[in-house]
Length: 246
Image (tube, rainbow, N blue to C red; front, top):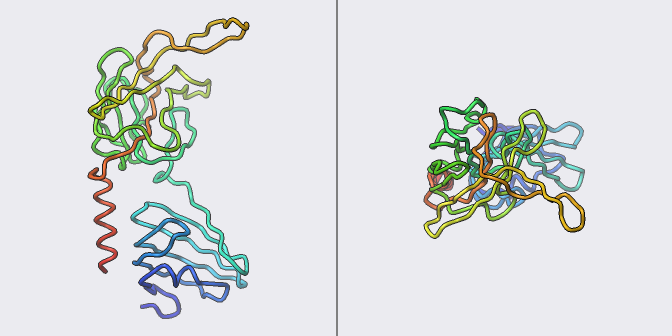
């Protein structure tokens, strides 16, 4: 175990970080802290392929559920994160967006016409599906175009937050979506028809029309922040503690 670079285990990221063009092909594990280049503090597996002193590495982290590639230039490593179903989500029109905790809101599970709303790790939670990081949220329909999401700490504090239902055929948005957070932490999400008015300057301006339900062939994407005691965060923390204790 560990001979010729086969399954060697390091107590910190330092040994992996300081690999260079002479490092032989092999696979390695790191269970300690110190791999800041990709934001990993524990539990990292690295595969390296070296041909001509220009090695390529693949890094996988269980705790961050991510994969990275790194390339040696002769003096330094450059890093690129891989896009997977673990760190991206597919919007209702099929485009990829950066993911974290995400919920997909529909009118109802029974009337929904999109099988892919519950694919790639998304599970039903009322009139919505949620990915593994958003496990514990629940969505209810209160009225036409009005939905309440409970179990999060609100919309994502960075990056995108809300995406309106999109035409799966690529013809654009089905409506205008907005969200409001109540004192109890619940999010009230509303969907409206698109309405165009003529401004005083003679320009067409998009504004909100009457409330509408989510079209049966689409969904609203909501990106969230989750509490520290969410199921996903507790799983990640437990895995990190187990790894650091090895």
